[in-house]
Figure 1: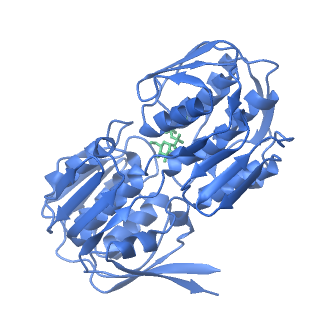
Figure 2 (figure 1 turned 120 degrees about the vertical axis):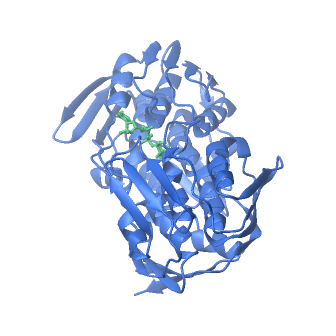
Length: 420
Ligand code: UD1
């Protein structure tokens, strides 16, 4: 069944929303459940398409994973397989994160190599190099990776760039390695700290996450636990940008402002009033926004590449021009052509995009090209005159449990139209 979102723009937002749990925390945590003996209960787990894909991977490995209300219950006791089918790998590129955990548990793992995705090539060479340093033998043949490790041994690994996925994969493998692993030049994203907190709640001994040096004392038997993931800072950024785009006054509950500092700084420059009070963030925006200083994406604590598209969408009607520079992924301006269909003035040249504010946007039929690009179309549609129809929203469902539900709570006019 194909569905689309129907948005009537021009309505300022107003409301109070509890933000869903973080996709980029829950996915590595689901991979980490493979290391734990005993039931893991993930409280208020966001019901995302990528979570479904992870659940299907766990089930295909022989694990049990089922929902009980909003909680996801995982028990990996019955795990009796160590390969992930090509079909499941293709469904979610970040499934490579299962590699370290499967290898640590079974001494063997077979997966297909994740190829390119909508954001351009997404190599896992750093993951593989790190696993090899821990003692894994990895053969790549015909698009498949065959990994074996009689034993993994902790040691120091220096990442040549701070990859989020590589840091997490190596943390998981290191939990099953003998001795101490030190990951240097590790990525510092808050979700990595969330993974550390989960592993420690299961009896692991991991420290340093959130800094560039992560230390894992391996070989500890991990048990089940109950855990609640951190709130999703990118979903929060999306709704702050939605309020900036449409104007209004919103409160996002549960979100930590420190984790969103670069996004809130950009929105403040544009004219929004944003305040964190320890329990959430309030945001008041009277548009039009003003153009802001150049936005350059960078690893955390820099400006998140995942928030680039939604911030761009929030600035389409700003006074003046804003320059974006995307430094993380090669192909991350695919939303631009769709925004232009709504009347936006955006020029892309290589990794740079220049957004010049226009007087008005008009509702249009547009297609999602990727997860955050899809969210950006919603942000723009909220500020457009008339109705927009947003198609191929499966991309959005990968990371937003219910974007229409959330935006409705915030006062937007948005519905999901189901079509046969
Ligand atoms: C994670 C996030 C994603 C976010 C990205 C950057 C999850 C599930 N996904 O993706 O939402 O956009 O961080 O913040 O957490 N690279 C290599 N070799 C490798 C690994 C990465 O060259 O082995 C490069 C990538 O091509 C990219 C850069 O490193 O240019 C950053 O990638 P990485 O931090 O690994 O992103 P992901 O973990 O895939």
